[in-house]
Length: 95
Image (tube, rainbow, N blue to C red):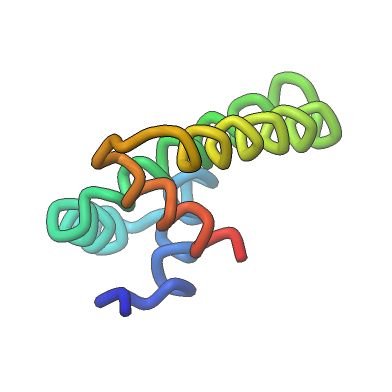
């Protein structure tokens, strides 16, 4: 079981991306990432989606994220890489 609150991680990431995070929020998020590096993988993916959404619109961003998820699923089935932990976390967070 994960040692963090899924909804809290969502909240902190959303605040940071929206530019509404307080210094305490940023410190908390950075501490969570330091303790659980797989959160950084998730944050990177969501940040990219956020930027694409702003540039291209939500519909195109959603298509790109679906394509990315397909690639991640394929990677998880075929790779022995240790980064799978981060991808499993991504699947957990988006469920």
